[in-house]
Image: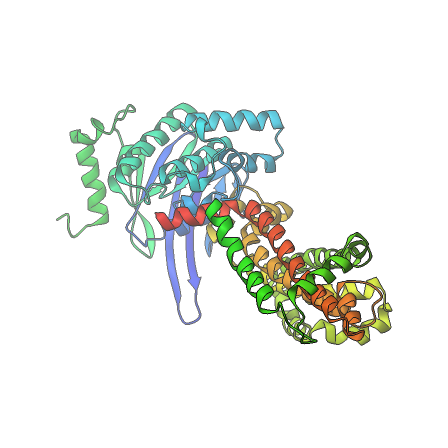
Length: 255
Length: 255
């Protein structure tokens, strides 16, 4: 349902041009949860921006459900890393979740329904009338996630969403996202620099090289569908998969 | 709360007390006792005086100021959002901004006569500038991540200006509106010093011409009081509108 075809992105500067992405091709099938891992600075955010239609590639194209992506499509939602800057600070939590739905032109009843359900599923029903600045970082990111799923997207893009929260909150949010995916079945492309997180959450881990970026390896994660922080992460298979990913990212160190 | 009221009233009350006793036995023609001034105040600015002069003055002030606010915010937003507009108008705006509007009164009389319209135009021409420039600055300083978020969720066009650009720029806009208010009061008085038949400024200049010094001082005190009242009302409105901004800033500082 999502096809990224021979993507290339060169940033033209005044003195020099930077080849952020050399060649990325990958496909996602309906309902899949795929993780994208790569070293820092490897153009992951550039990739997210291109796939979401915020940026246009130098070469190649992104096709979502048969349609070329040239600007942000209406059936794609994004959760950004900087949750503090991604929520509207002048609106309450429920208004934040409702605004994209109002733009879609849905009925008031439907909007109220979606807002209530999505806030419920991230555990923030009580925070409906709070303002973002009154919430902790983890809660703010939950609002962003609620907003994304209330939007009823066919593709959910998450750009290192838990990089800026503390470890304990990160574990809760990982389980939240995984649980939501199991319930709702939304196709998810999860970008992260955290190898453990990628293996824990994904059905598939796509490893990117450092800049100029290309796809190094596409690893199938054959862990059981039932996952838990405690058991899954201490299983031998998890360790094997983790090592495989690590070896792709740090080829010299792994030897 | 009581302490705050005491602090706010302390200096004015002290100053009035000092003035009262320092000027009590004065026989200087230009610095009469405060008691004489206050008697003249009560005589001149009773119900009749308020209706005859304060009402027209304040009406012109408010009409001029509010029109300048609408024009300033609209133009400032336009110039802030569109780079070509900014480049085209930069020098023209700086040129007109440099000319103090009271200086243009003789020209304005040619176009608008000596009635209310001319005075209102003078007020608009003075206070539109801080509003316009601060709005432009605010529009240009909106958060990029929030801008991307808006695009992703289809909040574009008019909705983008309404939900993202203007609220994001509102701290700057209020700063401009506050400055514009000061200008408006000053220019309102100046516009009534020449070619006027009513108004607070007119009352002051008439008192000067007839050497009614206590009434002149009374008029000056009234202008100051008007400034205080307007500033208080403004602050009240601003606090309500920017509650989210203070909250977010405080949260950031304590993080």
